[in-house]
Image (cartoon, rainbow, N blue to C red):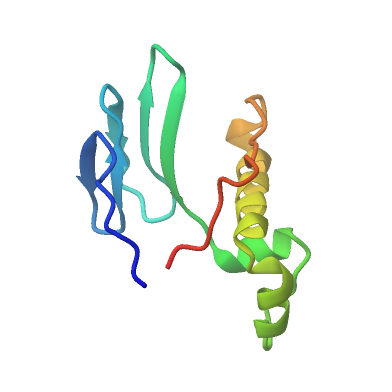
Length: 118
């Protein structure tokens, strides 16, 4: 059975050639003209909430996690590194290891907040 379509989140749809994102109402928008790294940042200065879009190298992400990105990764992908929660933790670690964010609050993956998309 197919799931019923859900209503889009409240806010504005921001469209770029590389991504689309719903930006919550009241958030400022700042697009950067770069091909990789942080592509877009949006935030609410009153609540100190930030949403950003980053483009990362999958190869670099895996290497930083100690996975050699060569050969057939399908078995380890299905059993460990490809699980949504593991990918979320890898992304959070990459964010925290970014020199620009080293003085910031550590990223946290909320239990039950991650699922496979599609």
